[in-house]
Image (cartoon, rainbow, N blue to C red; front, top):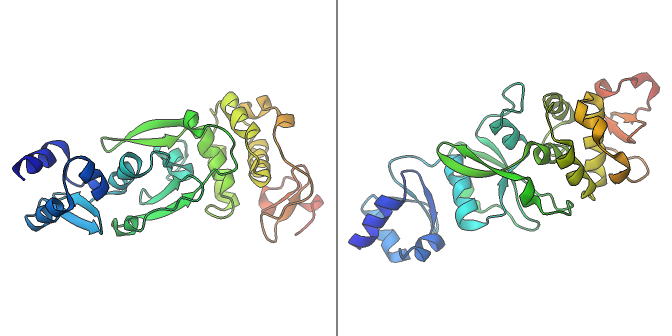
Length: 259
């Protein structure tokens, strides 16, 4: 018991979220965890989930736990990743609204809802046929390293979630700030994407904002399919990419059909 207490004090920090499965792998059995709750060293967040007392766990503590103890394929995605890297020209979201990308058919655990003042948004890049790990980087947030998408993948994740998690206008405002994306990384991502709707939205937003990197993309290698797709209900049809978008985003709105 004393050895376990010393280990917890030395190797964990106040506010750290710990799964019992991880504690067990470190030699702290469930019975010991319950005793540490009784003596005030740990607090139970949910069944089989604890945190070190001394500080309320933050979203950063929760994500660090997910990545280190639950599933190492989880990464901070889209809007959150861009914000952490300063790729927005205004505060695009509150830090308590967190985008996480998960592998297909994996769902966020319910205990995350017990983390105070956080709203979670989950997404998946299920139709991106490449090793996404090469487009991830470690970012230090509140002294912890979190695995996050590079701006190029984050931009793709923005397009992939229009209009479900983010509306077209907000996505366009974000793309305005993405001046320095790497066209080689973008090409690898877009060429590996089988998500026709996402590819069209990305190319529309990229074309509309006309950053230097857009001219270096090889459109012929990007799957955009055929036929029209309704994205924005009541929007205008962009004739080049055959998707409906908000009227204010169409350069020649009067010449485009209303949907």
